[in-house]
Image 1 (cartoon, protein in one colour):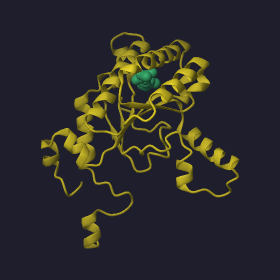
Image 2: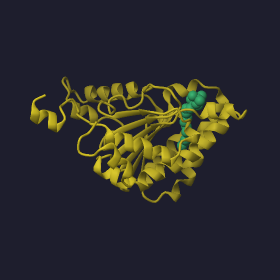
Image 3: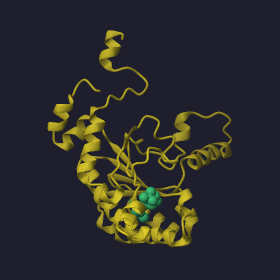
Length: 251
Ligand code: FPP
C-alpha cells in the first residue's frame, strides 16, 4: 500500500489525475481470451480475434486519452504460428487491415516489436512503412507481432557479440532490444484468467506491476482499464528499496 494517497482518495480522483500522480507512463496488455469469447457464442475463433482487434483500437486510444505515453500489446507470439493455418491467416489479415486503417491515428508512433518480417514480404513491408510514416509522433505504441521475449534478449546479446563486446552492461543490452528508447512498462495487464507472462517483455518487465483479470479480451472495457490503473496507483512501488517512510523510520 502506498502512503501518500489513500485508496479512498484514489477512487474519488478523475482517472487522468490518478495516471499523472502515480507516474504511470506505459501500460502493456496481454490480450488473452479471444478464442474462449468466440466459443461461448458458438463462433469460430477468428470471430473472437476480429472483435479483439476492434477492442484493441478502443483500449489503445483510451490509454492515450487518459495520459499514457506508451502502450504495448501482445498481438502474435512466436508460438502462435503453430495454430491452425486458418486462424493464423485470419490474424495476419487483421494486422494488414489494421495497418490500412492506421491513417486514422494521427498521434501514434507505431513500432512493431518482434520479427513480423519473417512472416512474409507483405507483412514486413507494411509494418516497416507504417513505422517510417509515423516516426516522431508523441504517443508510442508497440505492437508485439511474431515476438518472443527470450529470443529478443538472445538477439540483443548476439548483436553486442557481433560488435566485439566481451562484457556488457544492462544499459547496453536495453539499447539493443526492440523497445530501445521507449519506457519500460509500469503495468502489465493480462486478460483471460491466466496468470503468467508467456514470454512477453521478459527483460522490460523487471519492475512492472502485474495485474490479472478474468475478463476475456473482447469484453475488456475502458472501465476495466480504470480499475487496473486505480489498483496500480494504490500499490507501493519500491524497486527493491524501501518505502520512503520506512526508510526514514529504519524499519
Ligand atoms: C490470445 O487469445 C490472443 C491472441 C493470440 C491474438 C491477440 C490478437 C488480437 C486481440 C487482435 C490482433 C490485433 C491485430 C492488430 C492483428 P486466445 O486466442 O489464446 O484465446 P483463448 O485463450 O481464449 O483461446
